[in-house]
Image (tube, rainbow, N blue to C red; front, side, top):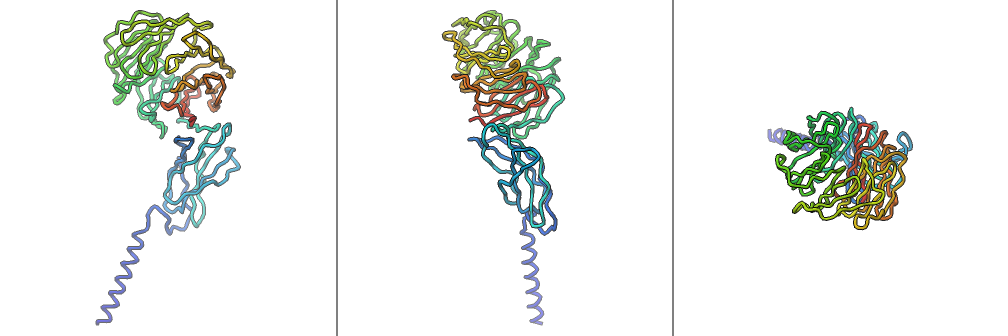
Length: 411
């Protein structure tokens, strides 16, 4: 009887050990399923710092030993394995490649029984990462980074303001209320509000960015917040100035007819562009400090003010000119586009100027030398809107091809 008891005890211990061993196996790692793993999907490229980017995918298998990352300079051939990962890993960081070259990436899972099919292809384009947001059914006219560049505003010809998550490239909010297409959007980080402009209907709408509700509707063709959020300026033949959170009270700014305006980055001055001059207004007391008259300055559909307020750029057909306001000198004449320029903007440090044009290209120029640093190709219709991220490392573009792209890493 004692021997039988001992035998039963041994059997029980062995069964427990075997059960514990099986229970300890990672249910999402390599298993005893005798088949190749499921293919990964949703491969995307995400921007990082110091010239790095990350490939990220969805892990659909529960029996992979790891993943292989393949790279090519052609979209449909020549892929070479460049890296592997362990099981349950769904991303890998890589370093940006040589300029003026497009690279393609795809990923597959593997185990002892074989390989999965490959994922979709992600693209690193022209030496910089190019992410394309999901295509919509209407032309995009403007874009704006906000909230530490995690989100992006867009305005389009379907009369909608969209809020995008930059990293997932998904729409998080849609705001409807305009009667015509939207050509300008801006964000106020002080009061968490959005302003959008529809020139055709002379309609400006101020939105609550959290709930998407309408806070105010004003008359005008263009609107922008000062960087500190204290002011909202609206163009309606003249420039009308409001407090950043009070839209029923017009500040006593002199009635200046205008074609365009902008604030300097420190929110100290308002620059009003007229047909033949530029007026500098001190916001503290709304007094005029200077009137600048520039040679060869003309009416344009695209202007840009440098962040320090010392330079102004203007598109003139397929070229852009940059003036130094202090002496009216043209410091750069930028030629490189083949068709009219539709949008220009300075980088946050003022060292670069980006231009988007009807030739479907974007060029990033060095301001002091006039040299073209990057030429970005990928849109299939005119580029209507561009915006640098707050660190100047990325550039968003809006196009008539119904897509938004984000380019980088430039620094």
